[in-house]
Image 1 (cartoon, rainbow, N blue to C red):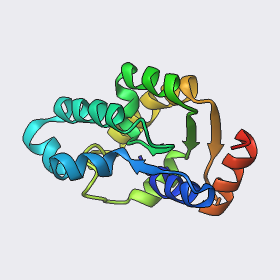
Image 2 (cartoon, one colour):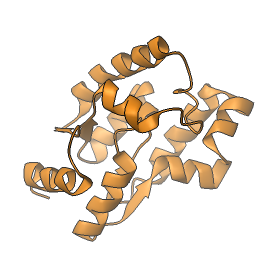
Image 3 (cartoon, rainbow, N blue to C red):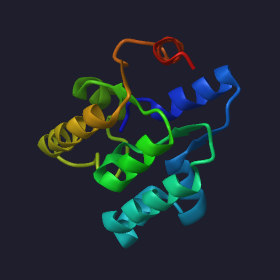
Image 4 (cartoon, helix red, strand yellow):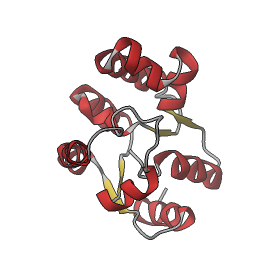
Length: 154
């Protein structure tokens, strides 16, 4: 959450002339706003929508996922089976600066300690399942895109 996945994914797709989709955007187009889904149906329903979105978008060449896609191990296995996973590592401090009080992120609008727990709970999953780790702090979108291309030879 807040690592720049959507922006980097779109820029990478443009640079490489590849098809692109963002699963959160896909979910919003199909089911409505994410904050509303969380409020009205809960996180479990959202995670189901996220699993469906991943399955339904696998034909795209570049897919940006929501930060919580790692909450379901099935998603990680599905991604691993079907492509290359780039983990855009961003420090908690940087994410906090980027997101601020973003009301469109239901899991971010909590106490600082809860946000830190969420961050630290997800990191090991990103680390374990990614093929490439890109550190994003202090880098421009174009620098990150260049690093992805260089590391993966895509």
